[in-house]
Length: 203
Image (cartoon, rainbow, N blue to C red; front, side):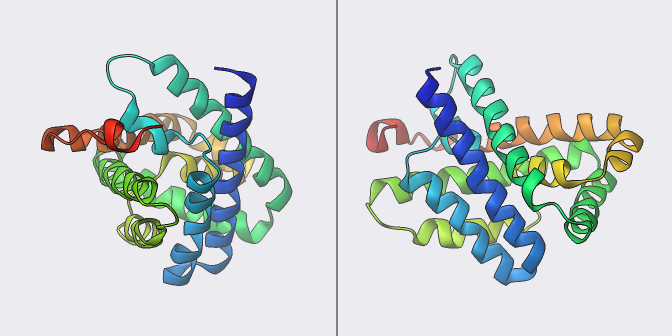
């Protein structure tokens, strides 16, 4: 990881944090569509987002991917520190409470769907310049399906109150690990189809 890679990872987290802030404020289908701004910014600016590059990591490179995840979370935290309000906290805790009720296994399985959608949308957006339609459709689809996105959900966790986090810390750790693994598995699900997005799209 270079300094530039770290910076690109932080900015990617900031973009998702901004998108998640909009979603918490607006909600519903409109909020889901507006969330697409975050992914469009990541792809257009060639930033490093965990779910945007996981399909390129298979068999090696896990250390770099983990560092990208950490810096993505840092970017989200910077946005959360600025935008957090009691109203946003209440919305975020509602989302996380629903996730925890579903349990880590179900959340992990649902996260596979998010990863698959993200790889499909990102690779198609990269394949044709200025083709944002896959992202404009893909993002609302995974949100409306209730599929967890490990960076967006990290932002929701960072907006939650300290008391809420303390009360649910063990469940949150298990839940978050499951969605990170689920997102990664979903991002690499395309391998079962025999497609090679890395050669056709590149990094």
